[in-house]
Image (cartoon, rainbow, N blue to C red):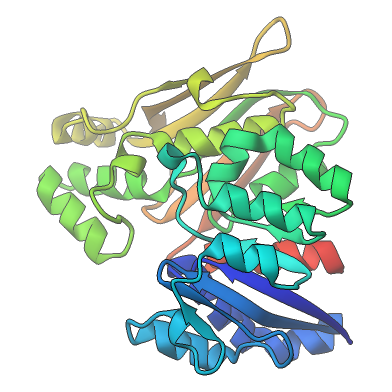
Length: 344
């Protein structure tokens, strides 16, 4: 039995659900993979807790957070005001799981500092946080190589869909001449509601109640989330050093219900499509825009809580992957998939 000591930064939707997954899967993971995945430290926006010997009790962590508390209230191990970066700089662990909010407009902090610090201290990193990969993709991979650790980020692209694993592992030897993806669930959900006849305000309220939309939704609705995911796909799968400014970006906020209903009458469905088209010089033209997709398009029948990707290649044909994600559980589970990829 191998014990893997884990630090977890972020106890929101993803981090808390990851704790629940570990709780439910503990005996299975021990039996199937001979792994004891032990949470020894965790941090949220109000503090942190660290218990290097016994580890933190997952039931207690879930109970604290479900009750509206902070991990800093963890008996005997919690410390109010203890910042995530300080926990990573001082705590001993094998793997950092970075699941804090993206904060791209703030330089992806504190996530970027936590990831850098963890790798310099010899920790592997698994993260669904897009921010560090968008802003410092090459740097972080070079850092991982320098310190002999692994960097995994499968959850950054399309929830639980293993788009990066498929692209990096199963398309080896191929040239991808077109990548098409619907990597954002929120926009499809909202556009379908608008096509049903709801007003913008009604559609957004419904999306919030369903847990699909958070806050004012600008990050999703204006296309920034899809653009960030496209940048990561371009770097990881296409080996194209893309940045956010390389993406021609159009969100869905200027669409009206009439256009969406007209598309449905034509047996088309609007989706926020992230595309990378190979150019003659070997570079890629990147774009994100709402597009009416015909029903015979591989992504034209995606449901309200589905995402997908199509890799069109020179030697493998078109590889299509779709996920139905009715809850955030698959997104949270990507951290487990990444950890297993490191150790199994």
